[in-house]
Image 1 (cartoon, helix red, strand yellow):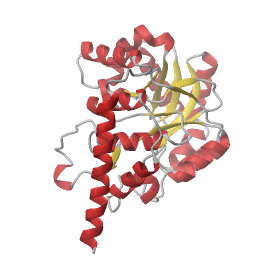
Image 2 (tube, helix red, strand yellow):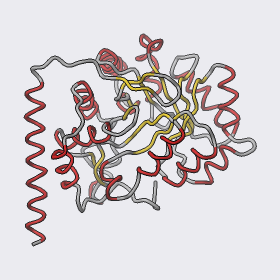
Image 3 (cartoon, rainbow, N blue to C red):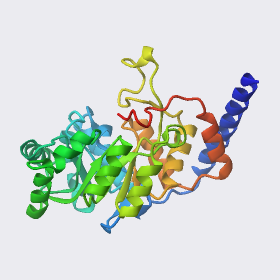
Image 4 (tube, one colour):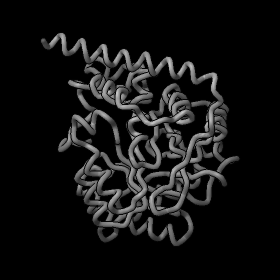
Length: 321
């Protein structure tokens, strides 16, 4: 009986994947439209529904970085996101984005939790990114409640961000998070402009991660930006340190059909934009999907969810990373 259920789930996923692949192939004869844009919360900014994650250009040659940034901008992407922890991504993205900077929305992050270290990181990011301001500056990975307490407490990094906003060095303040508890608390304790968090079909349906953050962000009118739309599961122990996707700490959804369905599932929610994996192949796929985006049909969503039954999510509620 179990084998039959597994077979039926596999068959449904395969059928949806084949149908999706056929539609993608057929759509190649249809001219693609520029990537659509949505409003970012109360800011009024219009961002492309796909963001350019800085990891895409990490460790790439400068000319290669310039080419992929130019292509992304030409296809309609105006939202670029990077962080100091992404290796040399800032050094690569800064010069590559310079010709398009005036028409782009640049987001960066700080791992600093206190006033002084966050200020030093901000100034270094401005230098490496070759810009005089960052549109959205975010606290990177507010995973623990203690992180939130430090940031908002006396001498905390929020003092830097509020001062930098008055100086014109940043325009909006946000945070990224992988903890539902911390996300909800942060939204209750400070009027953030944005939140960046994982919104993924497996995490949402099997780990219970996402609904509570989405609801709270909507209540607050906060701009909603999302990660991990194309993620699937953890790498097997034998592949954790040696796997075929060096820019993904998680195992991405199967390329191309399942990954496309996963991205469309995320974009079907009331969010502004999703940032695909840093792997160039998945990023290009995300641009293709975004340029032909249509919400999932009921049978596609059913097949996507069925194909994820029993799969280990990248983390669990209450054991957030």
